Length: 493
Length: 95
Image 1 (cartoon, one colour):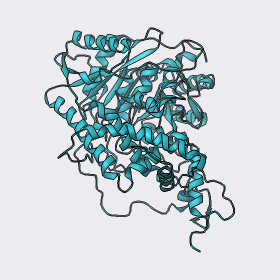
Image 2 (cartoon, rainbow over the protein chains, first blue to last red):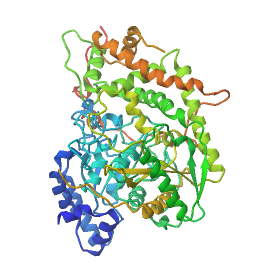
Image 3 (spheres, chains in turn blue, red):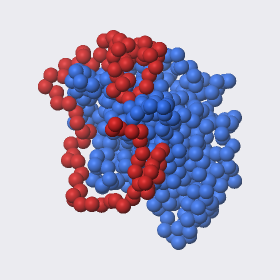
Image 4 (cartoon, rainbow over the protein chains, first blue to last red):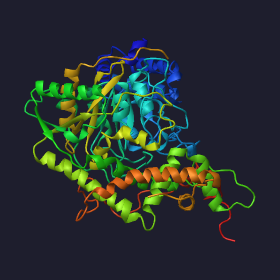
């Protein structure tokens, strides 16, 4: 029965509805796979009791013929989502012991649709990182392995990516502020979509940079992303930036017919020193879309180069404000105080003990760029540059481009610890192809499209028009069919 | 722009994060590297550009100004490191 965890969501859905398998069986298979995969450190809070009771309830619904697509499907949930009564720590020491009294909108919607929660997934602390090495739980490990080294699954949704790639669950939630769904998806050979800003409610998702954060699915293929995104999307009065727009049927959009679609190839994404394998992959992907009947057009997005520096002003600024709430008063960790310590010492010691080095660094950078005398020079300038980055995309779409094809990452997965002595900016460069999409609020999807010479997966990114995830998923579906990526990591864990 | 130790100390204080004196020079150096990277933004001509405030031009959702929630004191306090008699407890603030 252990092969059940390898099913796609779509295949499991069909098998459940036919009665070929029960949710209890699927769930048991995943729980067994999870218990055998501690070496990956993907699941950091296991919730077998919750899973079993949700699976039983789903089986009742299936019997009664009341079965939404996700009914009975076992999923992993990133630790950034608040789940009622279940540890939700954002992989930070400062939220040690925190068990929310409420359920995030995304998990509420997933559970209403009958989904089963297997547990909470590892990630970078407060979603700040690109390698899952800033987590209080320790590194998550990529199931792909080519030598003695343990590789990063990417970040920040590293646990989600590792869990899906290793078949510990059928799909997982991720969040993406600068690439945190798409980069780990590319590093582990899976599919992940960041929807248009406002498509998915942020309510109950621990905030990092509120104008950039979006949740999305991480799955084994494009169809599963469409199914899961459907259940996660929709207007939520509890999130004032949530869009009051109808959610189209994403799965129904997957025809694979992209004849006449215009695909833009942005010349600014051809970086100096880009590995030839990435360049080759990008060319191959371009050919695949052309062969499928799309028109390929060279485009220009002139402000691309300034996306990362703008991001590293805006994201830390928003983070410094959002993370001000962790003060040792209302939830989570409070430092032990010495005789005579007052409230300021309580704040300072609590935050020094509770936040890891990368989070401290970003909070302080954010504090600096927002401080008196620098607000205009840094923060406002970055927001103006952001407006220009968005305008670049607006112009390209106005000229008739339907989707944009780029590499997802500048390299394949690297070894854990290899970036330890690099300066922080080296790590930030992981997001060079993905961060523009968050700044402009657009939907972006990473699709596994090939392997490097050493046998590690590589991904391509497609960027779509705002609110047109359905169209974007269909282009991704066409790319997926042409690329025919079916490789799986050999089990070593 | 180069950040000196005093600035690093001031930023840590503003952020309410305790940083020991001997860690300040390294912190200042990191800030300098990151701000050096950010300095690239000065190359961009932003004259006449409005700072971006929202991703899609939409009016923030407004609900009726009525009470929709409340009476959850025990839930609000459930995760507090120190809660007493229905309140959050903190070290003495006012002498």
